[in-house]
Length: 182
Image (tube, rainbow, N blue to C red; front, side, top):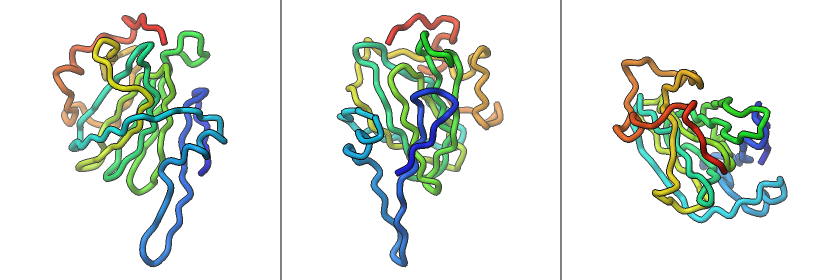
């Protein structure tokens, strides 16, 4: 696997080694020893999967300490725009976001460490997204930021008419209301 650095420190794209032949392909989606060799020491304890149709935006979601979650995100079917927002107040990129297209075709994965809000938009007709987390869900630690926050000004690569957002995500606070610690 190769690690591709992004414009935000500690946020990396994982490109797995792909082995193709006449039967199809094979790759290791996750290998703890190889992650540890690359300095990514996460103890993933749960896999989550979602299925969504075009236009769905899920996010921006996070959990605060002591239940903050690191996520390893990949797409099993379709294509998404994956977005991570740096919420680490001591970071040089605090309040900045990074986005990358993840797809079943490109097989890229985004490693989202603690201290980030995360979300994605579905760019294909449908998409199945799978992600590993290193902490269980905790309702009291759950937080989020509105997907259309004007301070962040995220380009979700969808027209306004296409956007589908849950009622829960529509009532999330704006970035200027963030006061959480990781």
